[in-house]
Length: 264
Image: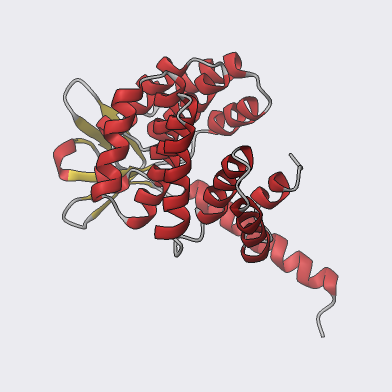
C-alpha cells in the first residue's frame, strides 16, 4: 500500500508536470472552420483587423473575420488587479486593468479585464464609466458568449448610473425573449430598478413573479424569495413568513438565508 507521503509526492510531481505543460503550450488560433493554428505567439493588430501569428518558421497575418477566438496565457497582472478590487484599492486596479486591456486586445483576456474594470468603477461609485466599460464588452463579444454574469453587471451599472429608461427597455426585451434563466434574472433586476426609484409595489410584483413563474430556476430563487419577503414585511403582509420559511427550507445553503435571519 502506498503511503500518504508517496501519494502526495506523486500528486505534487503530476501538478508540476501540468504547470510545465501549460508553460510550454503554444498559443493558438481557433478558426471558424474548426481548424486550430499552433503558434509561438499570437497578437492582434487593430489597425488592420488581423492576427499576427508567429510560428517556428514564419510570421503570417490572419484576417480576424476567419478567427473564432485566440488562446493565449492568462496575463499575470490580471489576478493582482482582481485582488486589488477585492481589497477596495480601485485606483491601483484600474491602472493595471487598463494596461491589460490594451496589451490583450482581441485576445479574449481584454474582455475579462473589462469586466473587472467595470466592477472597479462600480466600487468607486462611478456608474457611468462602468456602463461605458460594459458597453465595450457587449460591442465586442458575440451575443451567445455574453455570460449571465456580464449581463447582470451591465444592468447593475445602468442602475447605478440612473439610466433607467435604457435599463428598463433592455430588461423588458430580455424578459420577453430571453432564456428562462436570463429572463428570471432580468425580472429580479427590474424589481431592483423599481425599488431604486421608490416604486415598491412594482418591485414586489417582479420579485413575486420570479418566485412563482420561475420556480425551476433554482439558482435565482433564493434572491427572489429574500427580496420579496423583505418588501412584504415592510407592508406587514403575513406572506413574508411563508417566503422566509421556503427560503430556509428549500435553499438552506444559500447566503440569502443568513441575510434573511439578520446576518451579513
